[in-house]
Image (cartoon, rainbow, N blue to C red; front, side):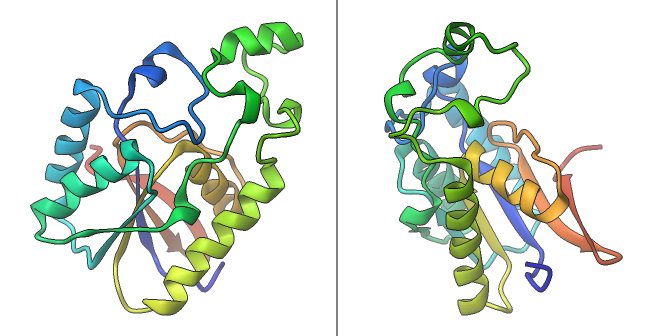
Length: 191
């Protein structure tokens, strides 16, 4: 992973389930009006950056975000099912804070260690994310890639590369880059 090139990452725009605080996982929830506007804003911000390929999760919320960005550049969004959000199994559609209360977890505690057996567990998410990104970097070594995906993959990437599991915001473009041998995650367009 330390030999990976710098790359761009964009989490999908907002959905109604984001607003409601629900586990989305692989449930295919579309962008809401705010999410479409966020994707358009991200496309405007990213217009100043060179991008060779836009690679997206197949889930509607990510693919619509990716398409908005790609079309502004006269590119087509490429779909990779490995970029889909992790599944939360029987938790999908439930409100996160309610599930945490039912499990007796404090609001700030991560739920990763308490997922149901039918969910994708964190080590599986890390492996899938690593393999998907490595495959793209191996097959397109000299291209600037923009990945449009989900919170789970953003958290996995940030943990693998920086050692800290970061929280990616909806439709905020990020640059993953190496600085003095260490990985940094910068918000694009931030002052």
